[in-house]
Image 1 (cartoon, rainbow, N blue to C red):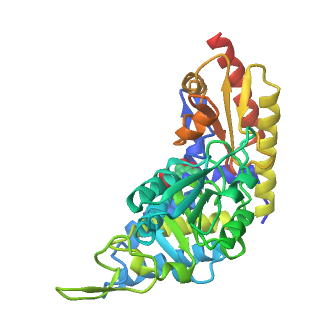
Image 2: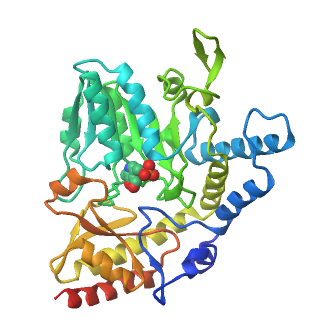
Length: 405
Ligand code: PLP
């Protein structure tokens, strides 16, 4: 299929909106992407046509709901190139996915064990491991990054040893846009026998993912950052690892046999899916991933690269603006600070011009400390953004600079 940004934009009803009479320019895609009509339709269709609980009903609606729900799992499995569909676990999003793994890890770690993360983590992939280590008496080690915002690979390697039990890192940094060499990092972690979790919250919507090729044990991502609904996401795990991973929540669906004195667990994927799942949104996530996967991926990547290049060139030429994060390999987001004002003021004044960006610490406070900034302004891109919108951002920033002066 060819790539036509004008046609793509027409699929997103919200992009027709005006903000204070000005056309919406939505550049906050790293926080959440907008949803195409087919995803909205999938939710409406589920609730109007076949709302029922899955796996347990003895009626047609339950059958249909179960088929749609499990079909969505197949779509995700294919998207990730998972070896088996039961390696795909429904969660409420990246945060819950990481928590499931970290919760299990607390039962597997012992005093003296080590966990390694990077200095560019979102809190979801930092606080979770801090807590797991605290509970188990293990220690957390932070792989440093350079001033460019790239992981220091030698320092990362030096942190790995026979005590390292878990290594977790982001596919793409939400605050800097840096893309990590996840296959290489995984290989190194595997040399010491550690489990590997990739936080794919920002990676899933920006490139091909092949979990078998990466070689990791876990890959986590959220639907809402890849054109799907909020409140649903994925924990993918390698069957051999997931099958024995300590269960997370207990209750219905995840059990095999229960007596008053003991219980045994269901097989994958259900053993990690206690309770009624978010069926409608899971189906809509399937619709989103199908929609996204049917785009010409090479064209999508070329388009997003053009947006990033234009934004980077204009930012570098902008007097009084400093990019935070200049990694050689970046995708999706550009973070910056300006001499003329605080990021929050920049965000506010851009909003007055119809431009939505994100400002603040991006749930990465230690990373902000690392760069000695209180926060940044971040513009982040999706398939429906245009080069004209990037130009409009910098035009608006020139006005912001004048206003703040
Ligand atoms: N990890 C990264 C890199 C993120 O950017 C985010 C959200 O911004 C998360 C984890 C958490 O995702 P969610 O809030 O969808 O669970």
